[in-house]
Image: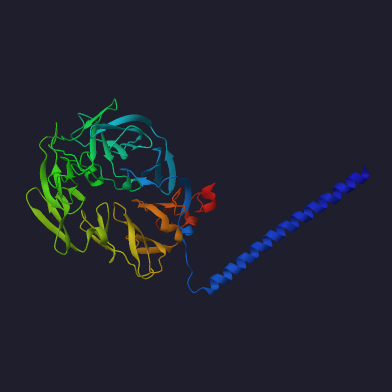
Amino acid sequence: MAKVKKYKIILSVLLVVLICLGVITVTGVFDINRIVKEREEKNNAELVTTYLDMFRSMTQENSPLLKTDVENVYYAMDTQGNVNFYRVEGGEFTQIEESGSFEVKAPCSGQELPAVIHYIDLPEKTIGYGLFTNTLYEGVFLYDYAFFKVTDMFPGFTEKSSLLMLLDVDKSRFYQDEKVFSEAFYLYPDHTCEHFLNENQRIVDINARMRTDYKMFTSDILNQTGNVLFFSSRYYTALADSNQLDILTSGGTGENVDNVQYIIDVASLHMWEDAGGVYYFGRTANGFVLRCFDGENHNEIKSFEGSLENDYLICGQYILNRASGEIYGVLSGETKQLDYGNFKKGFVPDLFSMSENGVYCVIRGSNNRNKPVLGMADFVADTMTDYEDDIFGYTASLHVQNDGTIVISTATGASASSYYQLIGIMGRTVDMYETAADEPFDGEAASE
């Protein structure tokens, strides 16, 4: 027994020694790394901050986060029609449990397009989405895709139905915030539906289905509170969608049979409305012009040179001149200026998000080294920050909210098999977050 105790004592002493050696070794490595890092920083004339200082990872999704009609609520839909809802507030990211789901069939070109609608009932409004593809559902011809959106009905039309259902049949817009809905329906409590506008004048296209430019709804139109305006090319080109657009107005209530041309020959699918009238783009010899129709006169507000499609980016009511960095607010009439001075040469943005209140702006682009760059502007603090990193080369969507919260979805690679969701708050770095659970973005942690 005495020998056993003696051996136990020796083993205990050895264990303590080994632990101490381990601690010393780890501590020694840590000290060396710290010394090397300090020397490198001292030798660099300019210390470079990275997006790691700004963003943190929340989760991986199979799809990018896209905006809903509620500012801080987002959805992610995969190609199987599964939908997740999220709310982002004050830098916090939480999933919203769906309120339910239901099946619906939308009559299009003599067929019924089926989908399952996943929805949430929020205090602000009802939000729902669904998907039809010919791989999910068999036996449907003429159509191979339709994105379904369910939202609150326009004011003045709620006696017939409280919900509006919209379809976008262009699959190239699946991962885009801005959809163009060519089909619109009253959605009834029993989940049956009826065309929202009279379609007596609608004709078929070269593909033997109803023309998609007969009526077109966008996010700008869904914000209306008066008689419903919509884009249409119904009076042009018999067998194909036309590049010539008009803005039409519904009949107000009832069957909407007296649709009339409200504004003729607009330059794009953009319009805004306030007490002064309806704002829209018209064409000019050297570019385009912003006009306001007050019900009687088409008043010129501001002229722009260049191509609306190639030289400008639009987010909400804000128009960004990609080359000059000038931002113009359609409804506010204010002009703001982005300073590209600190960016690498040749920077040109290709993604643009502006908070509704006009305080914050986020842009993504590339420079003359073909490196992806993310820029962030705070117009109240008068600051402009940029980060150059390859991760932003795969940015699928970016948004900035009124509180300065930035939400970015970036693919994990060129295959876009999954996405990292990055979140940050303008002007705050990771070490300024209040809770210990708030950690910087970490690729390995996010993939777990």
